[in-house]
Length: 313
Image 1 (cartoon, rainbow, N blue to C red):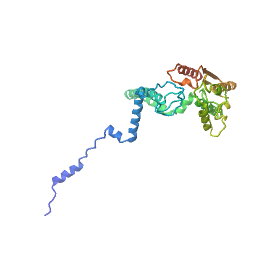
Image 2: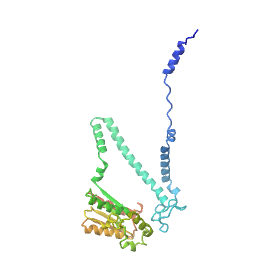
Image 3: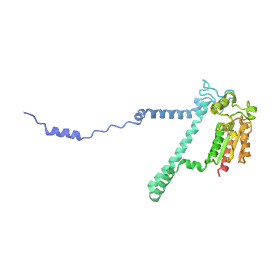
């Protein structure tokens, strides 16, 4: 005789099927982090940067502003782990000490933007009505305007050394192509002539720690890639300065590129363009960018700010 299954057992099985299984407990933050190698690598890198900035003085024994003209442009070594720059300053020390101001600037910017955004969002949600609509329209307007339009409304470009030469070359090409010309430019001690033409290439050869023979001369030929070094695309001093916007030129009395800067000033004046030339006493190439701790740098920043304040009105 076949034994029928108990109704109670069938009911229990049915209830078991209907009972939802318990959801797995979500993984913790560390578990999710370790499960994503790229995220873990990013966190480790940020931690290294922050620790390096906080303990810069303990990690590197060199002052980031100390110059050693007998140890310029050294390769990495046991004494200087990342080598030295053109003024003999320890690169690792400058990198570490420059981390903190950079991080502080980012945090300040994020704090201001977040505060404004949170206040606008909370107030729009709380009051509603016309204020909510106004905030939404304002945010939509900001998102709709292309950044390039804002940049082109008041445009200025600036650079130093090879960057200064590029500023001049880009402006010449922009004028030739009949594109939007910058409202003002600044070319600090521009490398406007790659052909080593000019008085200061000789007179300041040993007064300026910047080395031309075997270094910049080689770089110039590599950059030219077979073109004539006096081609205006490489050496803007040989191009046209007609139509140039107001231009600020900076150089030092012991600057290897002093002649480049003075010659550009003369070309601008010959083209009847507005030019302001400032030569700083006793300074070598681009020394006005040594650091905000130096009065010479603060003076140059004030000069640059004053120029653009007038030129961009």
